[in-house]
Image (cartoon, rainbow, N blue to C red; front, side, top):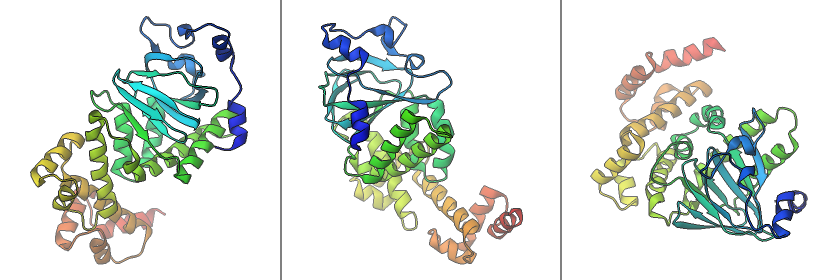
Length: 324
């Protein structure tokens, strides 16, 4: 992160000054009004906002708590140690991102002066406005967001080691700058930036720390979805099962249990969306498009395309051209 932002974030806050003066406790009333320690979005952000930002409080342990929002923590400088769901210890290094859904519990050990972290406070509704852009990209984007939004006994967090991924670092910095400066059209800018950030993150599933058994199934299915996105023309259940050291039958069950859809359905959905794109944005012959998205049987393609759209690929293309 650029030095000007670090210098802006580094000064001791009023809350931190009180802690340094000897008051060795977190003032719960700054964060919650309820008997349980659930950090309240209404305490963290202005009314009417769907996303906001605050600097993580240093010099003291932040006790175990939950949030009624999705939290994204980014380490600008230094590191912090997090205990998630009372058991899993996560070390968040400089440039790392930690996504926590609103159903996870979370404790943070004391941060030093040069350990500067930023908390993004994000209401689930914010992602409802980002999702339409992501749905046009791939199923993996949607799965990533659903992991953060749903109440689940597994996962609940995603830890990305992305300090050396320049596009992600730039997008996070842009989002921080936008939230701190609130320029014109900030809401649309924030949504677009977050959408672009998630598009980049779907390319980095191998950078999710998955040492925790609770995360294994989430990371596993992300790898499967990424495989479909990158290999849809030739993808097969047998190939991905071999890559993931699974039998075909076990792979099929895992995919169905975690996504609610079969491997064949996920692959067909990707191929159809790619075909729609080629019909809309290119003048390639339909027979070439059928081949490019992975089908050898043109009759089969026409049948499933008609079932999906209620018209032939030619009429679909003509309808789009007529509407322009």
